Image 1 (cartoon, rainbow, N blue to C red):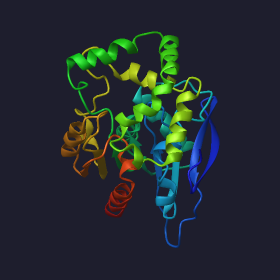
Image 2 (cartoon, rainbow, N blue to C red; image 1 turned 180 degrees about the vertical axis):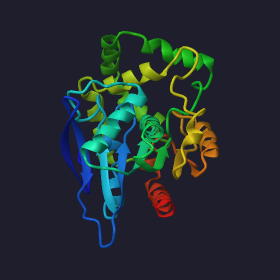
Image 3 (cartoon, one colour; image 1 turned 135 degrees about the vertical axis):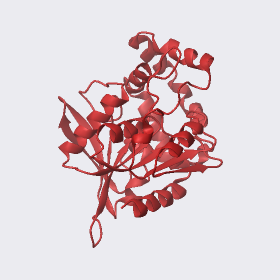
Image 4 (tube, helix red, strand yellow; image 1 turned 90 degrees about the vertical axis):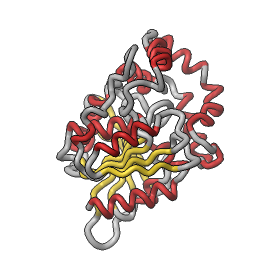
Length: 293
């Protein structure tokens, strides 16, 4: 799928090819805003799914660029690292390959974890942050029992896990109801692409690697709460109040520690808040861009 207002292209990187979606609108008169660099989430996500609305919403003001991470979408020939720090470094290499020296980094879920690491590891690149239900901000998953229950299956061999994921594809549509509070709020094109991504060979590999890298038996290995206060750029946390995948408390605590961060908690909204509450999301991002620049 190629969302309205975008075009698909690829770049050579790290011995493989990274698929990008880029806005097609030409910014209007006056100086163009800092480019948006968009990072999708995990599971059976890709750049076209998470950022379906973003190209038309923001492309008239600035460049909008979204990448498919290794193991997702149309990116090929690059082994998924799993570790969000390594993925942040790869994202920085993509920016460098495109000649981008400053970006507004936008990430959802797993991509929020990557965007936070991008700001911490490459502070000169990131001018502002938009974080939608971001991962990487809790010490444990709910409680110790849930933590070990998530960690144990992640230790199985990858062929076993991928086979189990393929067997679960008939239930992917039902799984959407755990991701969003109102499935009817999703554009039908997004639902169809979500199902296509789930059926893609090795479509779960990138997310499996992320889970292996971040899940520990007793705690999360990617908890950034101890260091997130170092981020000084303007930041927007946009989190569904009814998110069943990522606890909003992590966003609340992180925003309180960051000098220029603001939390928007969206009532009646689940994990894909940028899709479920698209109009509110666009308005809040526009406010951040106006304040931060």
